[in-house]
Length: 131
Image (cartoon, rainbow, N blue to C red; front, side):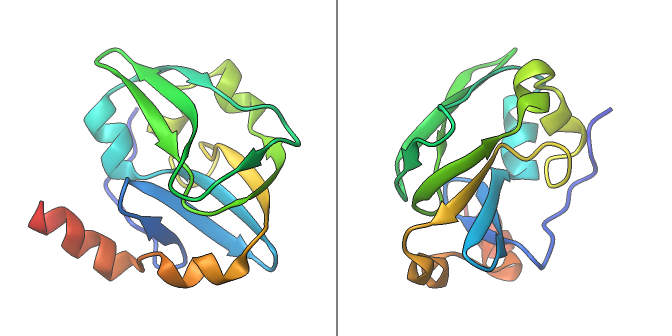
């Protein structure tokens, strides 16, 4: 069952519909409710290798749904600490819980200052309303 629309206040958002949960010098990344809803049921997550790096505003993987294949854009730069194997094995977890069990990566931030360039929940909701 798909999750209800939500944009938690404690997260930071990227205009390409990705989110980051900041915890010190680490971040957990995923795609927003809007992104998973637009894609429909996810059937595959092409994940990067653990210990690789991701660069802000660059693709680090792909999600495939019954409708389309889309790049996943990194909201922040860093070294990958963990790939969510549960999502690799069961991609529809993202549809069911995009901000909880449906996270995609955990990274160690290479430039914590990048966080300041992300949107808060209100700004992200405004972006959605304006588009």
